[in-house]
Each structure stands twice: as C-alpha cells, then as structure tokens.
Image 1 (cartoon, one colour):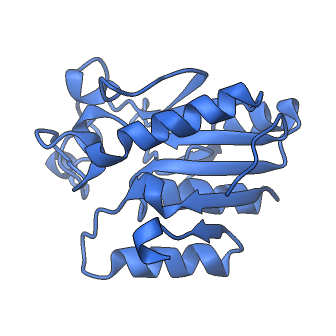
Image 2 (cartoon, rainbow, N blue to C red):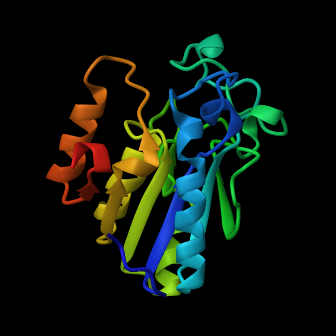
Image 3 (cartoon, rainbow, N blue to C red):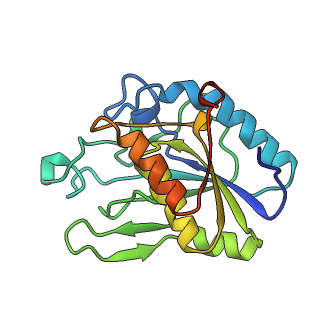
Length: 200
C-alpha cells in the first residue's frame, strides 16, 4: 500500500475510450472495470499533495504505428476523436502528457520512439517529476503489458522507485502469457508489483 505525499507521484496511463470501453478500437478487456478504483487513487494522491499526471495517446490519422501503414496496431486514439478522449467517468486532474502526436510509438509516458528509425526522445514527464522532487511513482492504467510496463521500466531507468498495483491495470495479452511475462520483467527491473486482492 502506497503512502502518498509530495515526493510520490501518480501516473495514470492511457485511460482512454479506445482502450477502456468495449466499443473502443483497441479495447483492453476489463479496462472499464478499473476506472472507479483509479479515481479513488487519484483522490488519495491529490489529498496528500502528490502530483498526478495522465498520459494520453494522441496519434495522427496516418502513422507507421498503425497496421494501415505497416505497423502492428489498428488505428486508435486519433487526435481529436472520441476514442482519444479519456473515459467519461475518469477523474482527470493534473497535467496531461500527450504521446505519439508526431507519429512516434508512444508506449512510455517518459519517452517516444520513431517507428522507422528507432530514434528515442524524452517527453516532459521526467523533467516534471525532477522539478517536483519526486522519488517514487505509482503507475496505473492501460495496458499492463505495454504502456504501463514501459512507463514503469523507464521510471526505474531514471532511478525512481516504482509501484504497479495490479488491481489498477488490465492486460492486452496479444499472446497468451504476456501478462505473466510483463510482471516478471517488471519485478526483475526492481518494480514493486502489488498483487490484486484476488491474487494475493
């Protein structure tokens, strides 16, 4: 259980309609189930004076990230569309960090990567946390085997303590067992993975 305070930030990853609603183009099964609990986490963080950040996929309509242009994923979270908006029940407060706006792969809240050249660039998130004096981050949202995982791993690379509560994420599981592999990778990197109550 995380104790929030000014040195602990909450990062809510991609709690957007295309991921968190059954009609979304890249629906993460059960994504809508975590919205209420994430809202509770946001409220607890704000009450304790913790910074809260929301990452938001914000893709152009044509990008190598999409299968329509040679990528892996169906078109999703296209800038300005309903699918890119946050889930209507999400309690969005704090700074929004948009990623993928220039067509880059935006898996991590801390960095984006050119899907063709592989060149990686930082977002403003790392600087924001450093300015705020944060030493620990709690990463929640969607999806556990992609953007949550990559955000958590980048946090560790920056020397932050990182917590991922499994009750506050869901997994794509593009291949069976991706969730188990992601959890193992997180733990190997030193991320504190908190089991969901049912898995405790």
